[in-house]
Image (tube, rainbow, N blue to C red; front, side, top):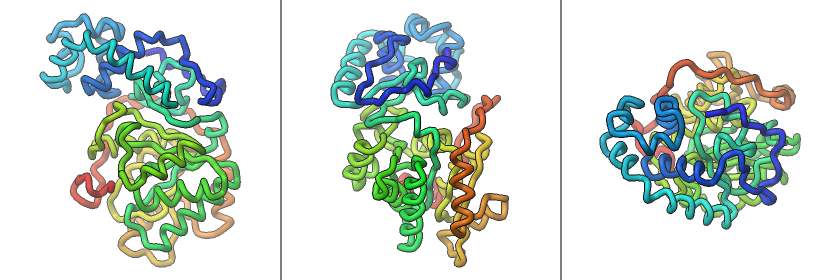
Length: 346
């Protein structure tokens, strides 16, 4: 993959977007077939292209070649890839329908692809975006936390997001209940921009209670998913989206997190990407805030007063560091409150 083609600075508004012809429609459909129908993930796609030489060559490979390219491919996936030919036209049609309904299918070769993803070891081969991602979104902060906050926790998320938005900073979060919802709503209350990164397909909003919120976000920012449009959420995909939340942001703020949880995964991803992590420094560190206490003990920036907030705002306004490619594939750390159960993300 020629990831050097990512040129975020040239990004037009998505309402005026026409698909970039640096990647022809057939190639885009080939990628969609692999990702959407065969369930090939970013790491698998990278390995297949490296082994076979091109996306088109993957469809000409026999089972042994596919297995040699990526040992994690299941026999079922290999069988699907071998039989994918007739589905390519269907994928092209799905892409056309999505584009007609203001959902844009953007590949890692397109100039509309978020530059922030280009340095990831395994960037998504395709992303679906509903709404607009703008050059100004390069000044962004991730806001994360528990899905079951206290009222004080939620209000703090809402207020911080308002402050970031008034400072011209885009708020990025994961559309979950609780802190994520408070962050998205706070940014929109201040007429600011916000981006929701999904752990499900762009046409299958999760949790369903946030469908109306998702529509609001798409009208004043963007929704983004690396998955098939109709993909159901799963623990793995919800965890994997944390690296994208961190990548789109210049810093991560943990508002309130328990001792384990997806918020700490996002914080870890942010640190791995060379970006600062901040945690609200609560006077009362109850069980839902033990993660904050842990992060602060590990050196996270304390966020307790206006001076701390202003320092963080100035930091976020600085260009994000160049993201070095990770040398090894990293599985999402196992941090959750419910033994890796999907219910933790409701």
